[in-house]
Length: 321
Ligand code: AMP
Ligand code: MG
Image (cartoon, rainbow, N blue to C red; front, side, top):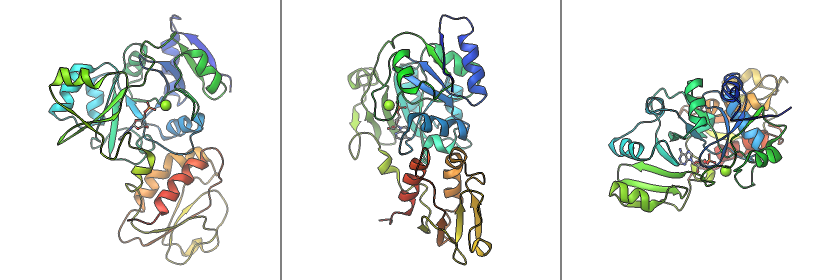
């Protein structure tokens, strides 16, 4: 893929970014923290492409970036304390982890299956683009997995060039540090990730004491295992279906015994990993029913997005404590 770069000084840059995003494409754009690798947070295939472009071997929840409070409230449930934090620090380098609002348009893949959601309102061009698109953007740092967050368009091009449609060059990011992530809970506000907004600033402005994260630090993918782990037993790498099993298929090939499956869902009849990633969490949720005791899952190739899909499936199959 040919990755174009447009300067933010170009009067057509924002409109072009909106056009690419509305078509499901990916745009690296500057925010006040670091460059974000942005895609439409409501489209599973765009979110799948973000993970693919970053080459991450697992799915982690992504921050939904919004342009105004109304959009944020359609995504997440704000209590008084969350409203106050947003009043004080939005737009800005503060991400709030809140309960997911009913009917939230954010795609389950961007949530990595969680029932909470991280939301942030950035400053500047990113915010204008989101407002024009009219939908939230998922935008993790614009770097390949395992590399440091990119703070210039040149760094973005070095690691993501050829994998995304467009880079908007807005020069160096003002802060150069990721957003601070706070989780707002009934018993207080917890720091999930230190970032550009200091705990001291938050405490001084709110008068509240910020609590340390329970379980230490950021909620890593390993801690989120159980949400969409179905209650039944999961058999991976299934090349046949035993009578009465629920079957999660992948690809066009016929599988022996499939006719006797209790139910069959194909993650992608075409064998497309992007489509499979986009449908994975919904499929696991659909099989999460106490009446469903046995689930067989077809082998998924361990390449590209298949790595992250298999990581999630292994978690779903792991014994529950
Ligand atoms: P970034 O790479 O800056 O987009 O940050 C994404 C990080 O936000 C993830 O790795 C998580 O640590 C955190 N995050 C996103 N959503 C949630 C959530 N629902 N609960 C806890 N942490 C979250
Ligand atoms: Mg990052």
